[in-house]
Structure formats: C-alpha cells, structure tokens
Amino acid sequence: MSEDRYIAAIEISSSKVIGVVGRTRGDGTVDIIAVEQEKHVEIVRYGLIQNPEETCQRIARIIDKLERKPSVTPRRIKSVFVGLAGRSVRSINTQISLNLPDDTEITNDIIDRLNQDALNTPVDASLEVVDVVPRSYRVGNFETLSPKGTVGNKIEATFDIIVCRPELKRNIIRVLHDKLNIEVAGFVVTALATSHLVLTSEEKRLGSMLVDFGAETTAVSIYKNGTLQYFATLPMGSRNITRDITTLSVLEERAEEIKITSGNAIAPDTPSTLNLAGVKLADVSNLIVARAEEIVANIIEQIRYAGLKEKDLPGGIICIGGGAKLNGLTDLLTRQTGLSAKIGRLPSYVHLDDAKAPSSEIAEVASVLYEGATLTDEQCLELPQKQEIPVTGEAPTGEAGEGGKQGGEGGKGGRRHGSSLMDRLREKIAGIFNPNDEDDSGLLDE
Picture 1 (cartoon, rainbow, N blue to C red):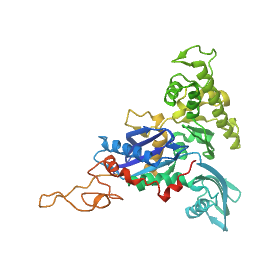
Picture 2: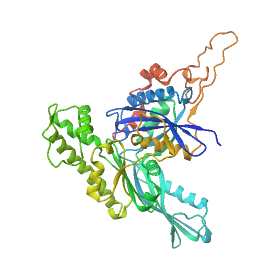
Picture 3: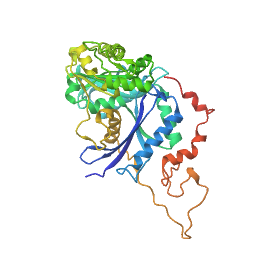
Picture 4: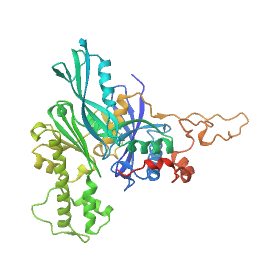
C-alpha cells in the first residue's frame, strides 16, 4: 500500500475563504481531516480579489488554524491547490483537426497534439486559456469519445476551451506566493472539479445540469452523453437577494439572517401578516420571490444557449453552493423546468472527518482538493526540520532572517517552522503591501 499523502486546498469566493487539508490513502479514498473558513464582505468581487491585504490576512489565519489542528500538527502547509471561479470563467467551443497518412492508428501522442493545439487556440487578448475539455472525436466518419486505437487519415476533435481573465490567477499568486511564501501547487477550475466529483456517471450520460449557486455568481455546467456540453458563469447570486432585503432599511448582516430563517423562493398561498422587528415578512417574501425567479429564469436559459431542451436532461438539476440552501429553490427549479432538482452531495469515497463542516457547504473546495490528490503526486504538507543546537549550547544566531535557511527554515522564501504563519505575517504586514507597487496595476475590477 502506498504511503499516505497530505493535500491542501483553498477556495476564494465572493463571500468566504475556505481552506481544507486532506489525506489520501492507498485505496483511492480521500479523508478531509481539517476545515477552516472565514467569511468576508467585498474583499473579493465576482471571484476576483479586490483587497489583497485583507485576503492575505484571512488566508494566513486559515492556514494557521489548519496547522494547529491535532490531525495536522506538527506538519506545515508548504503549497495549496486553488480553485478558479468567477464571472470571467467560461467555455468557448472550438474544433481542432489533424490530417494524417492513410490508415494511421490514433495514439496518445496524436491525442496530445490535439489537446496542445486546443490550448494554443487564439482567444480574446483579455482572456487566458486555463484548460481544455474534449467533447467528442471524429476519426474519418466514425464519432467516438475514445479515439485511441481507431484508424483513419484524419482526426477531428470538439473542445470546450476554459478561459478566464489573467488577473484572476495573478492576484491569487500575489497573495499566496509573493506575500505568504506558499506555493500554488496547481489551479483547478472549480466548476469542472465539482462536476467530476458531485455528478454521477449516469447523470452525465443521461444529461444533467450542475448549478453552483454562489454569493455573486452562479456557475452552470451542462453534461450530456458523458461529456461537458456547456459551461458559463452568471453574474448573479444569493447576495442579490440579500441586498434586495436591505432596501427594507436593515443592514446586510441582518438581511442575510432574515433570508436564511424566513425566506422562501416560492410565494406562500396566503401572504404573511407577521412583522419581524419592524420588517414585514410579506415585503421580504415579495423581494425574495422576484429575485429568485429572475435568477432561475437565467439558469434555465442556459439550456437554450447549450442548444438543448429540458427533455434532453432527464438526469435533472443538481445544486451546490451556499445559495442553494435558500428554502424552496430546488422546488422552484422543478416547477419551472419539470425536471427533478436536488442538493448535491460528496460521494462516499470522500470522507469528511470534520463534523463542523457540512458536506453541502464544502463541495467546491473538496472537489479542488480531490482533483489535486488524484491527478498529481503533490505533497502539500511537510514535517518541520529539527533544529540543531551548537555545541556551545548557544542558540543559533545570524543574519539569515526570514529569507535564509538557518534554524530549520524550509520552503521558498524561508518560511520558519518554529513560528506560526500569523506570527510571521504580523511582523511584516506593515511593509509588504506597497501602494506604489507597479504590480497593483493588475488589480482590476471584474
């Protein structure tokens, strides 16, 4: 049996930052052994980091708490997988073809050439290609999902090219690598990862839609015949509902509480006459229902954009994300589409050891973690090196500082294992964010 590996992942969304540590086992299962999160308002907008300093401090606290968990300590997090999500993340459909000599057998090398050509497909200068997903192949007149071993003189492939704005990745690297000395082990497109983990193979083959209902964005992924058919991110989410409620003269925190405890996406048969601390529940209901219906209408419209109809998706609609917890949302989707709608869950081979974190709330970051654990050999955590004491009995001294390797430091940037990440951050936070730094020109509103 292979040795257990420890993997870490971070998901930076428009309402919270969440970090997890997982342990992979030789039998292919993944145990999520530690979860920490911090909620926020407006330091991230539509998935794009707007306030690097605040984001840095929150991630530092999350890393520090994770490292102090009994299931993790004394290991230290040296790298993380990061989920990519946001308004600019979407797919572009393209076809790639190769002409071959007669009776050429299709090999992995030929398939890799197609993938590489797809990655190099020119896109708008404001976008960056982050992944390519093959939809189908055609060898001669034969269409297949598995072209390896077939024979022909031409191969064509249909790809979904996943793109995003370059600032999305660049701002994450600035916070994690440049400021916290934590390596990005890899970027994972969150919508694709959650589709792989949450949707069953039967749902993908039959035809289904995964809806990730976030705070400011809603990601829609549509599958049919086992492959991705359509992917888009809508610039609307559950925070739209919360802000509608603030028009009733309540603060956003209070509006969020009212939405969770008293809200429903479906209007009641009889309007409520109750008054909740000066707020009429009938007014709350009107606002929530109107916005929920607008969001659901936009979600359903994506089926048309995919060139499909509701009858093409007998696998139904699977919802994840914090916004999916709104009472009546899945019922509203069912009413409007005639399709079954349910809340997505983690599969049995992903175990959640931290009872404080419901699986429905960490599906996205768990999917990013699982992707990193199963598709790479990365080891994200390391044991601290033992510090050698000089024969004089004196503590080691010198000018190595935080950038050196003295005293058991390890990892890029000389991270000290003898002190927590928060301690190190407090020492340098005043100087690391220079408002005149030329890199700040990359921080654009999404």
